[in-house]
Length: 120
Image (cartoon, rainbow, N blue to C red; front, side):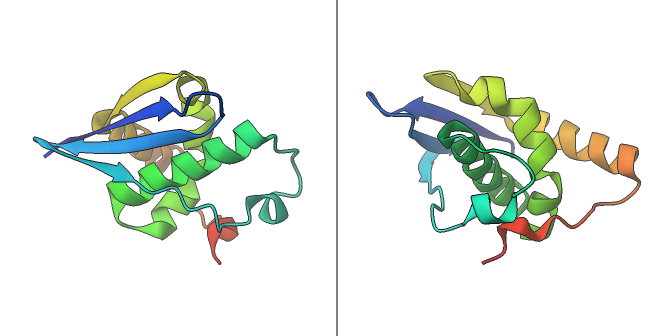
């Protein structure tokens, strides 16, 4: 069954509540703020919005794939593709877009790389 991911900006902040809808079930997706992204991505400057976009990307990918290794390997490209969407006050993302990105990454790379910067 396909999933839909939606986000709502918390008024007056840059934080989002992210939800997963599968069929008629809707649940909140927890964003892990314990991950120290800035220390793992030292080659680039991360604003608070960038860091949040990485966290949202990883949470969505982890939920969709149920595989942290795959999620970590495509998180940068996923964040780059979804950054504009995640900056909106309200957004909706269907799982077929995630699947298309994963398939595109597999074709382009021929394999899934290990970007283990999200490991605790």
